[in-house]
Amino acid sequence: QVLGSVPVQGDMNRRCLVFVICLHCAVSSRPVSEDEEHVAEVGDGAWILDSDYLRRLPHGQLQAGAAVLAVLIAATIATSCCCQQPHTEPVSQAARPPSESAAATKHTVTYKRKKSYLPLLEESASSRANPFVNLTHDLPLSCCQHVVRAVALIVLPLRITLIVFNLLIMYFMAKLATCGLQSASYDALNAQPFAAWRVVLSLPLRLAARWQLFLMGFVWIRVKGRCASKAEAPIAVCNHVSGLVEGLYMFRYAKLAEASYLDNPLLGALMLATQGILVERNDPSSRRNAKAALLRRATEECWPQTVVFPEGTCTNGTVLIQFKLGAFLPGVPVQPVVFRYANRSHDPSFTFPHTNMSYLMGLLLQLVNCMEVEYLPVYAPSPAEVATPILFARGVQQAMAEALGVPTTKHSSEDVALSVAAQKLNLPPDAGVVQWQAVSEQLTNVTVQDAMDALQQFRLLDKEGKGRLDYDGFADAMRSQASQPGLLLGDDNLRRIFELLDTGADGYVDFAEYFCGVAVLNGHGLAEDQASLKWMFDCLAHGQSYFTKEQLDEILCRACPTLSPSHVDDLFREADADGNSQVSRDEFIVFATKHKADLNLRA
Image (cartoon, rainbow, N blue to C red; front, side):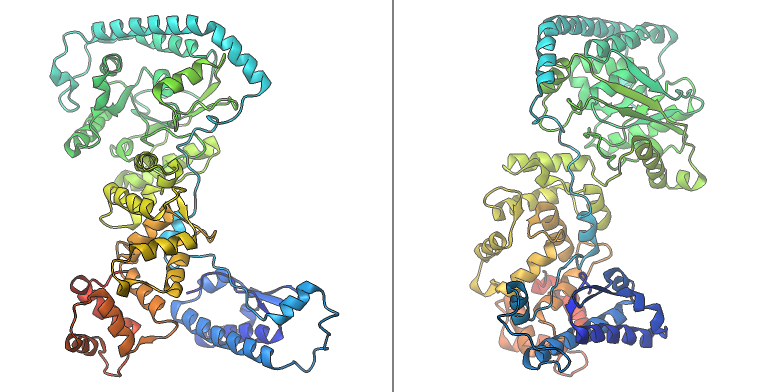
């Protein structure tokens, strides 16, 4: 496996690299001239082989080339240490600068790993930014901001009084519009559209919602684009930054929201007055009913348009996280709507560490809050997107991301739950963010509860609660966790494990790397279901292409200390399928796959 670029020194090593390329060309019947461009001089007689080019080579050729390269470089180093090249002018040690003298004395090959052995770990390490943290919560205030806040404090009592009064009016109007509704009207499947008189009574709520935004500082809201009609787009999808602000602005739409809103008298009345679809996230039957209701409302004309926030949770607006599929399952045209907030001194996102009260106070302590709303063109799905909702969701997500000028990531609302769990364990909130969608796509049968359990295990290793481990801390923790002296790994094996998990190559292992690495190495990967066994062999064979009987005996006794010597001999004979007294990698994988459960052969 090629883990990165390998800079080497000297003309002999240049010939080694060219030899490897020639070996590849001989196997693949390609002319050498096509590959010479992939060996480039980087200065001072150093040459580098393009690692991206190596990754494109077929696996078998790559292994052969890497093996030959390792042997030749080792031989070159040994030769350069023992012999003096005849064409090199001798230079006295005293005449050399200290740096050159040290380099001449220590003949080494620089090695830096840039890629993980496991593809899932590479993907998980691609983005470490946390979109669930407020961007301005800990920034110091400038002099101008102090003045603005002082003026806002003067008018704060008046604003709070008007806000409370307006909320009371909205509550009574919502109760009037929904009076006499039976409990069946709350059900997503059995609910019927409002009668005309209820719709008329609920119309003033839209004006009250806009007045509420005005009192919260959104004096002027710039609007771009055209709002589509129900016939053009039955569903609108929006990015989710504030939650409260976007909900008030889109008040005339029915909303797909959590049923827990009914526990709040005010929010529950408003949700019912807008004919919202209420769903219990943890109830599969409730989610199915909500999807059926969304399809029904999208195809029946008497219902209002429905707004959905497909991210499922609030972010700080720097990215668009993974979209849930609910809005895209009906396969009808949708209108993307994007919200932009231009106030750099105050981030209006309802993200960590805000509570309901601190978030509202943050808005009210700004004299003016800026927001822009853009209605994007209606997105009509192609036949392929109708058949595959995930393609539909990705297409809409990409269109919204381009309009906002932000990237897309595979974070999801499950990352918020893990972030909260990390805080409860006295870890930084960033520690729990693992890009859950990427994890769930690549791992089989891994749940959020599995991640919670892994987070607790990680906390036991991370004794200082920093959210990451360096090698020394990792090695000490692993040694302290060993239940038996025979199960204790040596420094070499611990270093291999640490480097495998450290996909960022920064000298630290964070929880995202730890969780993904442990999950894949224990056989949860879809594409790497035998990754743990491959890694076990490559780690413990110490560069050999086979296990000797003594090596396999040691592994078996570590995994299952109660095995008798005769049983170990029988197992070795079973593993040695070709009877050559050696167990190759393929033989080991076949053997370990068969006995993985009974012998506990797991990484």
